[in-house]
Length: 199
Image (spheres, rainbow, N blue to C red):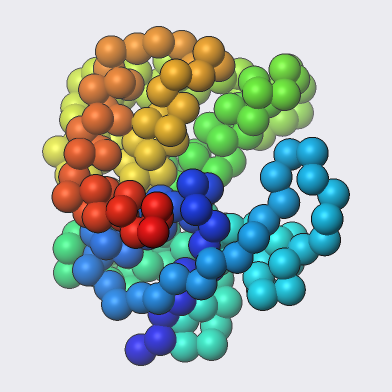
């Protein structure tokens, strides 16, 4: 099996080093450059993503991109560590829901807040960041992880994001969210991933 993560340090792809470490999957890193805010230079020709973004995943010559697609693909491909509920598991539906909520609601809400944009009420698929945070605080105030007692790749996306932006004024301060993020990033696989991301 050949598995390559298309990666740029300290970006969205960093979480996928963490995921691969959680899954104990064999993989290689292919480092690419990406455009950052204010940059106008062209796309890195070594990056197969159509918009020059990360993460991307190449599995036996097949390219997969977009965070939640990669998360689902990998947790289905490597089920042994139970980082993603499999088909037939009662938690499969909630797991898919949280993955979709991350990419379809939460991240657009965070980006809208960063850009100081109000989501168009009734027409956008996402809501204001305060509504997202209220929902997450309610959920995580009652249980340690999004699926209850079981850590999943959905927690990796949310927990990693909250840890990364823990000092951001865009997110309301919450002990529930702070403690949740710490639970997530204190996992041994997250620590291994941080070392590989920095290297």
